[in-house]
Length: 363
Image 1 (tube, helix red, strand yellow):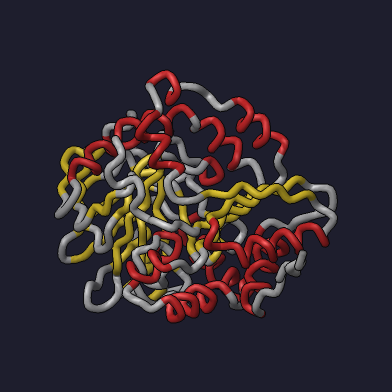
Image 2 (cartoon, helix red, strand yellow):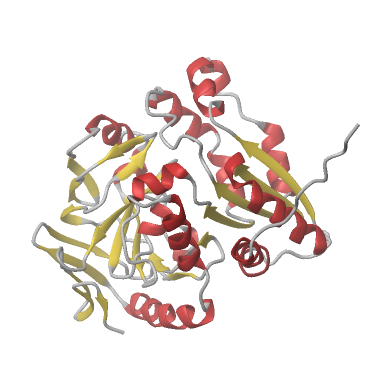
């Protein structure tokens, strides 16, 4: 019987991405327990990650996802099953030192026809696991797959270049620039966002800025903080939100006394309504993010990249990060991106300091 030799070769850029995730993002050390959660199309990166983690003397455990798993679950799970807390999964998370999530869907819109009420219910049940994950070293990276490339309007090879160019850069230099933005936020009291379709204000007194230096997202390149619960005004977002497998386009939100009181969208308004009705905190802002990665120059329909585009901002409905002294609690955290570059244009003021003008950071 012929024995076929297993091929473990990976290209230079895949090796470099793996190195960044292992050494820069998660800082893997000998003896650590590391979860790799990934889809099948990311096989070259999974193998390279496993190799590099093993060479560190750590213990990788691979959790593979594939098309149909989530859809089948939400199609057939009973209410009793949806409400069942996965204790084994929680116990494993408590014992985990680092988690590397690799987005690589075979069908990005698999849950388009799934019942949104089931998805919302399940997200509430497993929130305790999500909260435990945030205590660990973790990073998210999206592997270039056909669905992502199609949504970005690029060929697969073009999208692959777009992904790797966004990630492989001098992270120390970028972090230095973002630290200047953070210092402005840390000293600020009030934020105002202005454009021809937006006039929104909220406080940030006592809230701290945080820097996305590649520790949790790859690519990264954003500075964020947690708004106070006093948002007033209205905002129209440039780019869509994908929630529960649905693309919600041209979202407009109106706030009074910190809460969304009116919402509209060009498409899938029902999905936006489900998001806003998740819990008490889902109608409040949990994050203001400022995109600082100027190597990401175009919208890709992929939030991990789009919220980092240099010259954009994003706001998140729902849960706030405690490291920013955020107080809002919710089972959801939904980021929506607004472009301030030409031809959209706009400004962000921190008190009397102009921080962003037409996509340019003034620091």
